Length: 471
Length: 97
Image 1 (tube, one colour):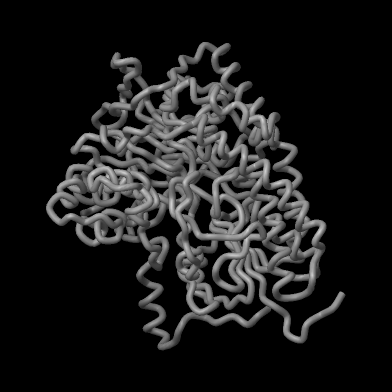
Image 2 (tube, each protein chain N blue to C red):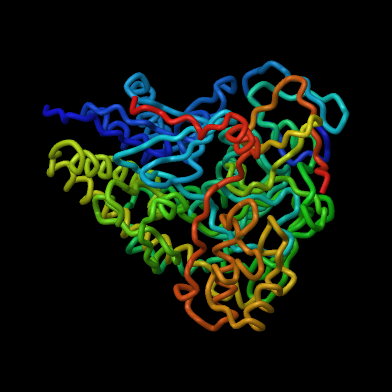
């Protein structure tokens, strides 16, 4: 193996499937990457690990994916002595090849040569009135409660929205003794049939989805497709969900709701790193551009996993490994072109499958047009759909950042993570233009709230935050 | 378990209990609980919305939505879904606006 005069600093952000596989690849090539993760334990959201004291079985936590999860989790664990693993650490800014980190209430900076962003995704949410009531959560949250804390939201729970997670979470709840009052899919049943040719790109995954639905039906869980979600009812907490199908309104009594409409990529750090974005028809969102290897428009910055495009955990592993090879190639030495080509070939099926998913779990087309004026769109600052529409009408704005400046949408503590997909659709609908044309909210540092004492401490000590050496 | 609880535990291995204070009342949680779990296994509110004062109980549980910040009696604020509960913590679920 050849060595370069100055060791290169490889940094991975995110320890989910993409980040873990990228780390493996770098260690195999003799590097010692820094792996930064917000969570206390590696795994990401999909393979999220509970605190050690819960002593949960992998089979119980990850179901069908237990084997796959164990493999990647155990391999990463074995590599820990060869890594610089930084759990409980937030990257809150990227500037001039340097990351600003927050760990245990203190700020640090970290310079990089190659940066692999594997930041994952959160639920994509198209809300309904009452979604801010206690007891209403994302599908991802319902799953985290179970995986990370051994708790169920409920006791009676409705799962609603659309996407593969809808049926997976409903089945996980039902098989852990949860009282699933209903599964309400906003996509029509016919969409699943239309998608079958593409879904056969990954027959085993499609079969799992069919299995969850069949099991739920056998368990007697009411399941409906082509549903319009009307409102969550309740005072101090949710007590029912009203919905409509075939022109008839229904009310399902419940103590909790888990909902979502697929996932949205976490792209703020790519934005801060200066990556070029392009509109993705399949994701219906602006995403950082990347080539098949994971290169972004910025030299030394790479993308992998769901933070680049929603393709799921298996594809995330492939893209994580591929991005690591690209970084090695660019900064250290030529890498195996066979392995790179193989990883790219395997990814093709995942993209085809994703197209099928988007057909099978199509987003409600009339969501923006039907959203009532009173609907709270921004949870942080309680800005309503009517206020957004009024702003478009009086100012003629057609662009997301202008709408943000005028209404504060996306300016609250979540930085638009929860409201942006909904706000962009409302803006496009009110302005009479395509979703693509309203643009996207620019990422802003800090990407998450910081304790104010960071600034105070910096001023008190009369020095900037701790600068780290390369090792 | 309280009838107002949003979170309900599934069976698991026994864990040490942790005593903490919720709005002035002494309560029991389990080792490994987040602050969010410690509260929502007995109540249905973490905070009040900044403008309407409406009750909130978190939303994403993965540190993204920032809708689960609670305050300690000492004044420090913390994100309930990503912070483990500690013995003696004095948590308040009605944030002063």
